[in-house]
Amino acid sequence: MKAIKIISIMNHGGEYAISVTYNQADENGKIIRKNAKSPTFYAVGDLLENIKAIESMITGKLEDN
Image 1: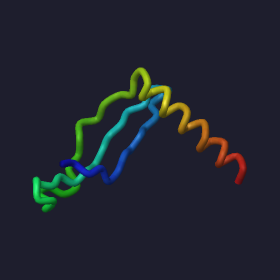
Image 2: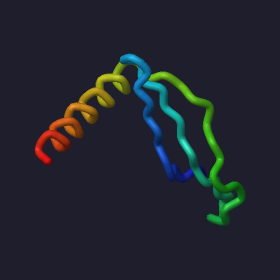
Image 3: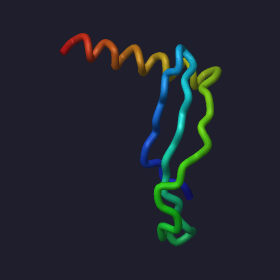
Image 4: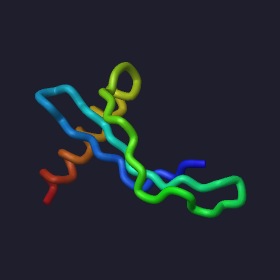
């Protein structure tokens, strides 16, 4: 099982690259790998639309402060 610790989203001129850091556990729940990193991938389709929606909500929060 992989438990996500960090999700990083980098905006590169409108293209969103995503990387994930996670811990991996065996079938008994014991951590067997800490702070493993997934390969970076680009958001497309529904994932891209969801990221844009989150970005819009965060931008609104920043403008409120």
